[in-house]
Length: 454
Image 1: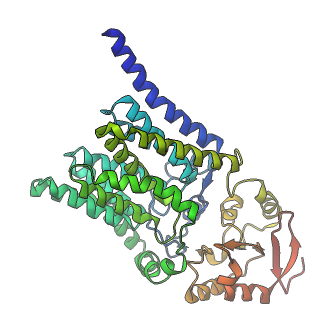
Image 2 (image 1 turned 90 degrees about the vertical axis):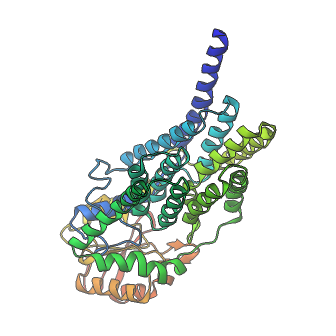
Image 3 (image 1 turned 120 degrees about the horizontal axis):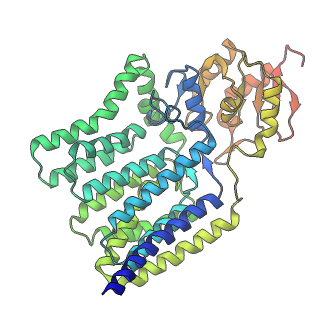
């Protein structure tokens, strides 16, 4: 009996440690892709630029544009972002482990392995808003699945999801429906609603108090519905569709085999909305652990299908191996040696009291060199952000505060379109009023005003 108990303990430890070790070693070995907007926007905030009025972002305020952000939590460097990323991953893994704790060890090993493998192949090396939403969504799912009576906490979790990204409104709605099906007392449901409204309510009060409410509404609602969604939309590549459907289809099927399947199915659909309008598997991280749990629970209830679980693991390993072969170990996107020539030039040449402008060059140059854009206004040159009126605004900033020089990447492309082709009027203004004076070693051109000699 004692020997059997020890074997069970060892087996449980192995089923937990092996996939977690594989996951963490893969993340450390693979490249790291922190969206540079994270540190750029936090830097702008620390320089006194106002959210949405001077920092034009179409996302909800989340972890960058509020007084409480990653910087105030002590995270203001790439190394800090990497640690933050790993912490989120470990939290996800621990919650998934807790959800599967009553399953047999072989089933748990399959489930946790599926998460570890597909986390990597679903662009898990990327850190973006969706990374935080994925953790919050999993915590919320855990509270709903376990029928937690902490209604205020459940509401707060789903309210935070909305605070980070607009599609979170659907998850909030599903959570409300889920709780209503448990027939709580009216008081309990109201507590959940209060918790859900609180994060965005406080953020809205803050944005209103600093006088940027109209700008917030334009960029996050009006612009999203009339511009960004249509201009920035991207269809998935075939390889992305395959990687997604390997788990999405069996996960949705598994939901139909579980009691209250319609709630699980709705949760999957709501979590999958983050994939639109701009497809990317980083956005699928929100639904990934939910799919893995439901597949694992299905296997636990139908052990005869364990071969299916093993097939999914093998397919995932094949995809992981293909990704690993293409990886540049240790590479940090947008913070590697390719930008060094640009940094050296700005650091040795720029007058920090005057603005600079970047066109096709990533905006992280600002926070890395402690410089600022013209008139202290920043609009990221994304295809979805550039409308006729936005181009007018950018040209106005260039006229009112002529930058000492403009850094131009002549080959900058987004989704196969040259940046100068989807921001043609800004480009015309640059070539009319500025001229190339220097070509840096990394291919970046430095443009100076035509009336100046450098």
